Image (cartoon, rainbow, N blue to C red; front, side, top):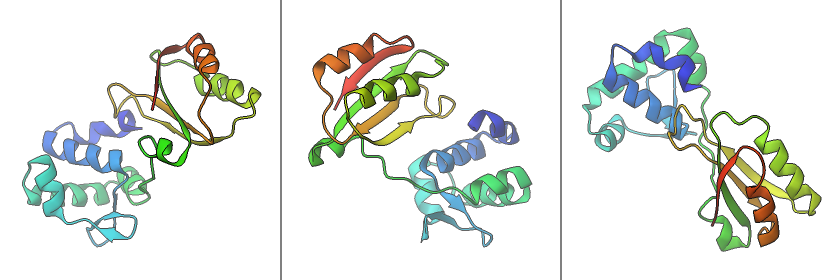
Length: 166
């Protein structure tokens, strides 16, 4: 998605950094120029400090987003989501991180099929956008740990570059 909207910020590198961060974390903007995580307001100063930018530029970025219909439609509807990558194992879930070959097609379907064949339920899938994350991965959380022989089978699938287990 980032590749479709980043051109709006080409002339404003700091605004581009701010907009990319809002998108990455699912922080939405509201009509009243606020930044929110769900219904919780996030002060400009907190975003500015995290990115080492001036808080006024954060506010200007929000204003710019609200003025451009395509950006407005996207940023007003963002939602943060729970990512269980680092907590799944603490509740008995299986967690695997797959680094796919660039632009591999159908990799999720192939992996999900192999997991389903073992009667293992998938609880969560997070596919990172390669335009937002340089080393984008596909994280799959399952209701129980994935057996070693299945990990080996998955690693041999076409389009799988690397698998990490958490």
